[in-house]
Image 1 (cartoon, helix red, strand yellow):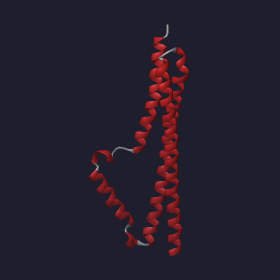
Image 2 (cartoon, one colour):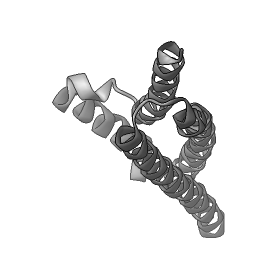
Image 3 (cartoon, rainbow, N blue to C red):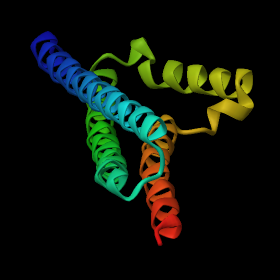
Image 4 (spheres, helix red, strand yellow):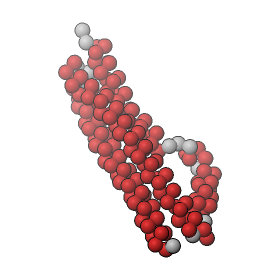
Length: 151
């Protein structure tokens, strides 16, 4: 029985490690996109809304859109790994019911929801998607402003 639990525990850890790695990749990608977007917006502010600046503003739309899609994919994969980890924790609890893993998790979840009722409902991936959408929207708005200003 202990061997079964050791295997399940290793599989549980692996799923959490994979989810953690995905979060690190998402953070790196988001930081890169924000750095490039900041530089592009600063460059556009220095040079004004001239037609040549479409070379800077239009790629922002693609960059922000890519960020949105990547964050959605990172979230999907993260959910998969967290669900797999929960599955392994249920199997561990079946073999060692005195641990009350799932009962403790449910209690902690309830306490967190009660302590942070407003922010608990906000999904972190939605915040990241909104940030990347803002990059795409800023590129689109600036591009439209440049085109509207053109003779």
